[in-house]
Image (cartoon, rainbow, N blue to C red; front, side, top):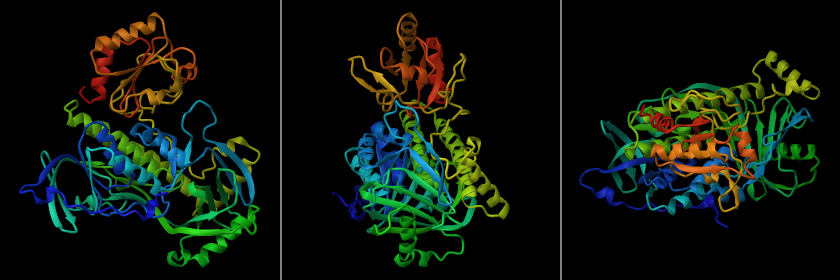
Length: 543
């Protein structure tokens, strides 16, 4: 088994370093974490050459981001590495909330059947990065350069020139577009004189990864004010390789250096295990970290030819697993738009919609993250009294459970107000509104085999879902043919399509137009060729 934490990648001198003038590339992605790797792979699958720069030569140390949401897994499926993630990760969908030492309620994030992917998997970040690096290595259009640090940038009308520091000295590189995926301490953000603004939380938390032989159900457990850690909160959930993540709230006055020491961590973990019936179970401490956090974002994610994604653009608290998941969805949004612009299929203005859509998503994530943090860590006696009263009520009253916030968990943002959406002309029910990420469902293929709806969508093109059979469906297919567009058409019909039909409130002849990132951009009961052409122009910012 590969030890991804100990991998080191060789720095290799590139011919670009000896060029008389800066070599020019269509896209340079800065930062080979989950976001930068996702973006580079997505672009390569769309036949866009990518230079991917990283200032280090290793993967993530410690588990770091571990909760990867259903929508993120669907993105990884499209990139060709979702199966590895799910096979290695620990799938879960049930969470339990405790007040003091009593369970006050449980929730199910995937209460309905008919989804290929679980609500979440827990998988250490170094595995995710390792699998993405291996996927990138299989794509010849990705040029991944380790120990290449961007130390300067000069924007020009048609691109930017980067100054890059290497073990053998500096060189310059020209790019049509630069994607800044270089994390919360983004060097590119500083080089452009930009900053992320928001709220910093005066609290400290200890993360500890432990291995033990205890057999607990694979569930998320969250305690408010338990007897084994009074006055604070604790989170426990399982990762791959029999490892468990424990998250202890410490309070602002805690000493970060002292709290990372094994002699401080061990009694905290021992008290937790004893309280849940695992007295005497032995454990080993792996990686540990003490952190504070802020909920903040850049005012704008686009600055000329530089586009910011992931933690370089926005930051949230870890409650709700919104950091890495929102970053992967940034990349998912940006890749198809960059590819369309570079291929000449869309104007540069399409990239403005990346900024507006993902700024909207960041605001939603920050809002949810801030509310969760305020509930988990009340900063006044009144706030604590309110929280504790809500937790007491949850045992008997369902209404109170909607007020409990141990971290509203990450789901895809519905881009309702996106400038790329075509407003409905027909009446529809359900959640699949323009701007929503397409819901998965079982389908039956033309050859009679069974599959999943999202797997049938094209990895790089717009997809049209055509529902039902009969004259209405045939007329919709004729309209798609008459539009003379290079759309990928998926028939959703027959036995096995009932759940998809229900989720999309479809009738025979209903058509949904999905963007390459699988967000709905238009839908009709009975489309015309003109309707379809206009919607595609709208989704490519041509209208």
